[in-house]
Each structure stands twice: as C-alpha cells, then as structure tokens.
Image 1 (cartoon, rainbow, N blue to C red):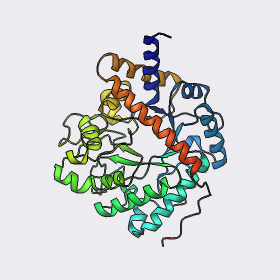
Image 2 (cartoon, rainbow, N blue to C red):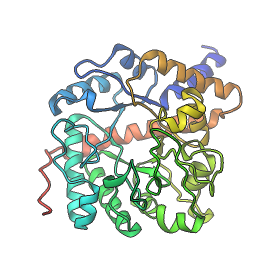
Image 3 (cartoon, one colour):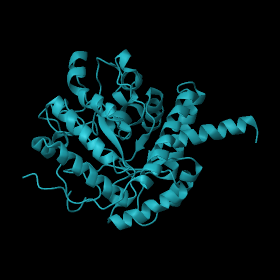
Length: 360
C-alpha cells in the first residue's frame, strides 16, 4: 500500500470514527451498520425504537460488539421523564427534580448505580446523562424537571453523585448540556436559543455543575446548541471553538475547565444547527470547534447518510476548514473511550440494579 493510500485510509477511518448514528430495528442490527463498525465507525446511539426488553437489547448490542468489541453504545437514560429502557411504562426511578428536592446524595448515587447496572445488562456503555443544567427559567420548554434544581451548588453535588454512581458500574457518564441550557425559553430542537448573560454569571451559575463534574472525572460532556454572545456572538456552543476549545478544554489556569475526555455533540440534526448550517457542514464545523463524537440521531440513519457525512468531513479537511490533526485527535479520543468502556464493563460487577428506595 502506498503512503498516499495509507493516509487516505486513516483519514476515512477517522472521519467515520467521529460519527455516532442511530438505526432502526430491535432484533437485527442493519448489515450496513455492522459493516461500517468494521470499517472504523466507533459508536451508535439507541432510542426507544430499539428497545423491547433488557434481554432483547443485550442480544442486539452483542451483534454490535461482534463487529467492533470496543463499540460505544450510547443512550439517554436520565430516569424520570427521559427513559429509553422503560419507554412504555415509564422509568422505575425518580428523575433529577425529585432527587434534587430530596437532596439525599446517597439516594442520587444509588439511583445512578442501579441505572448503570441495567444499562450494563443491556450492553449500553455510555449514558447521555445526567443533565447538569440549572433550571433558572421557569418557562424552559426542554429542561424543566430534567434539572436537579435552581441552586448551582445543589445541582453540582447531585451531578457529581450521579456521575460517581453511574461510572462505578463501568458506564461512562455524559454530563449535559454544556455550557448550560437552563436559562432559555427556546427549545433547541426547534430553533436556536440565545442566552444573554455576562461572564461572571456564567462562571458563578451555569458552569458550577460542569466544573464539579469535570473534577469528579466524568468521561464525557455533551455540548448545547445555544448561542452565548458573551463567548461567541455568531456560532452556537456545539460549533464554537471559543466554547468547546477555549472554555471546556482550556486549562483552569487560563480560565477553562481543563476537560480532557470526550465531547459529544447534542443531536446534530436539531434545527438550531441543521436549519442554519445543514447537516453535513454542521458535522464538520462541530469537529473543527472541538467536538469528538457527533450524534446523528433524531431519525434512524442509513448508510447513504453516514457516508455522505463521512465524505463531508473528509472534504472539510481537504478544503482546509478542518485540520487533519484535529480530526485525528477527535477520533483517538472516542477510540480511547471505547477501550475504557470495554475494560470497565468487564471489570465492573454486573449485578442487577435494585429499584431505588422510596424517597417519599
């Protein structure tokens, strides 16, 4: 193989590695998905459409691991109003607002641990949870009861307890939605929210739970599709180097959070991104800004979509809009997370999680 072909193959695999699509089906993983996992794709997202039971999901995720033993299998299992494993009957566990109201850190840790055991049984390795957003706007249409509360310190300590409980089971936590989605009356699924606060407020309120989660060792952080003019007047957080690289990644000595794990984007097809930038360009801009894993998932993906996005990322490198080094760094970060989850899943005691004790 020539040097050029080797370089092209690396570029192709790196572009595939950062894409985290979803798919349809409950019993058989699509052939295209297994093929692309073998070709270098590192992860997938699961929704309620993929789930019938824990045993069924375990069999489905086993097919994914057969194609890539270090595959990242992610889902939203927040408890309360947001559940994938128990979509039909509702979650067995209290959600964040109830946990914050109880303000019992042991309970929050127990709930997260029990959720982690259930996810482990089902073969899920990354949980897009907890929400570390502070619900400062009572009219917020997207966070609401998904928040632990309105007090930054309360939200911070319960975010940490949730991360600790979840990761004790070998499931990676993904704290969201950075740098904070609680102070908005606009749903980023539908449009681009704008949050007009100053830097002092941002650091003393919105960022407090994220700083605590990073210090506690969360493996992942998910970006928000929100515009904070104080950080970037033009691009939402997911597409902003100032937000992802200049704030989340930057060392604490330089005013950042010093996060060194995997940055997931929120679903890239949400209107806050797709309606303005388009799906393909949105993916490339997100990676260039500092995101490592791009969630593509409101509707099931197919092979044509994945390959189109892969090729758009490759073209962005060739056009000079995305450096090859940044793309490779992103790909290596998600691969490292895959290795961690594979090892942690094996090492963790996969005992069934008991229902959380009554918080009444």
